[in-house]
Length: 214
Image 1 (cartoon, rainbow, N blue to C red):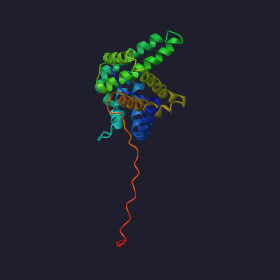
Image 2: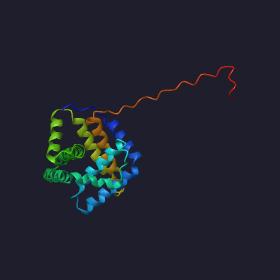
Image 3: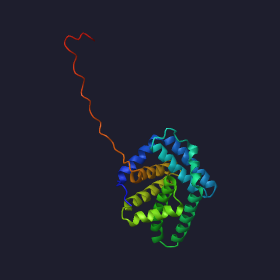
Image 4: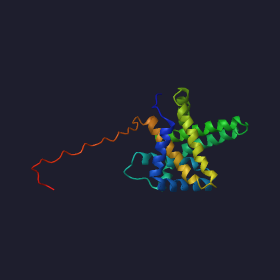
């Protein structure tokens, strides 16, 4: 399965610009996601993550109907599959936590698989099982190492906000989903971003000598 090439630095730049241009709606959407997830003990975190990914994608594609913060709940259209994915991830992390050091490192891989599986559920309407299978198939092809590393870094970025008494999560959480949405579009949209150089326009020719206009 061939995918487009990507550069980690370039994708971080795209994700940051997307977040910076739409910071207000993304932060409020992130707050809604965090509050509802906390109240439900994480039960609804999966569908809400899908919703935030969908918001980021619509903003990236300049959807004429600009997303609102409440659109984070549109992830509930994939409620069953997102919930099933989170159950699988939680079980995997619990098992790996029994292994010192190695288990912690493996958990980073699980987080990367989860991020890409969520993207496939959000953008391709895949089932949880098919989304996980697709991640492993892409990895086996040898073309998905860099995207997996990118997802690990994006996940770590999302958790960095907790350092500032949790306040920083308001910024790093939605930024994470902007990063993933941009990376997905680069790899799978088939329409890589092309930035045309700005061409300098030649100055207009001087008026004829007999032209008396001011």
